Length: 471
Image (cartoon, rainbow, N blue to C red; front, side, top):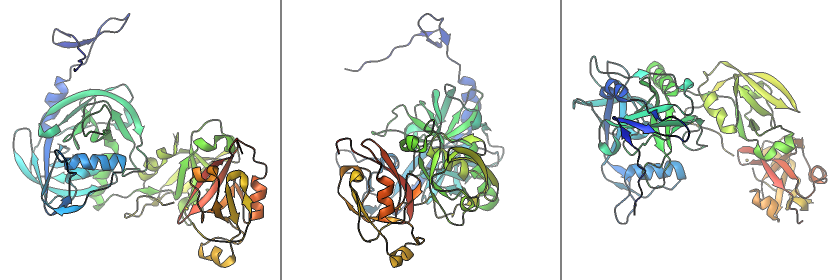
């Protein structure tokens, strides 16, 4: 049996009552809709040839639902087979001469893109440029004096504000939904879009809304509806929009140079949370530097492994995912003010921002090897010295690092350590021999966490290994 929430309609206005307070009328969205709906378009992207085979069973999973699950939950793709595919989405006109914004995933690999306006006119669109990392595509149709939206400022968006979406969910043009801003600066982790801090809303967004505009009460576009959090493919109460400031930055770069460049600091960072006690921090704010790229701006400015980045150009870093979007939007070649904490002291460092290689979205992880003998039973692992030739192969300096030869206990295994990992530091102290490693962990007591800097393959990160209390 279905249960429905019933709210009273009084005099044509929706009324919400709160205990002990006078009823308040919700805002009227008709003005925003009437002004902006003509500039919201239906996007139809056709792809011929190879496409993903949808999952079998009673009613195959739609292509865009499969893509949604892949983007959010890392589900593997299915075998490829030749067939045609049509992707439906939304978009909006940003200039009277026919420039249109939508999502990259709506038009990705499309052989033909059709645009349908609210007045039923249809155009063939050219993909001027697109950027998968930001999930933004700029289209162009031939037209004059076309209706346009008004671009707002996403930097002024706050939680609790009303928001309105117009789009084509399930192909139903000019559908209007509303809700509130439930979070800002929402980073979804290290998936497809590590450089985007999303606007999160509870505005109902469904398949086909992708690429459509998110408006504020002033009728200004503050975001592009991009993703939903769902296990079924339907709206579940969490929707994510790309801030319009990010989108317009992409538009300008595409127009100016035909591609999008991103700033690069030259560090790999990770959360501070696990190491608050080790670093003697007052809270878990900041981003812990796990790796510094040789020759990068960060390297030349003197940033070091173990530094905690507290702010970037005056913007506080509350967690490590906050940093990449800020750096990505910084113009390569500019000087950034980076506030760090080192040895319990705050300092500000000037870093020249580099440019992220266009075929590279980030950096990988830590190395392997063999060596001589020694153990750290408290941590459930053994380490060995690294001989000179192996150290040279790994690009290590003389007296740098020890190799994990055996993982025998639950502490090390639970932390993800494995034979072949190279340990460079213990509690921010360099170790270059098994004897130095044993000395560094000698004083650990049950419940203590050792802060290890571990290298594996081409990447380095800090790993916390806690001594079991029942050891």
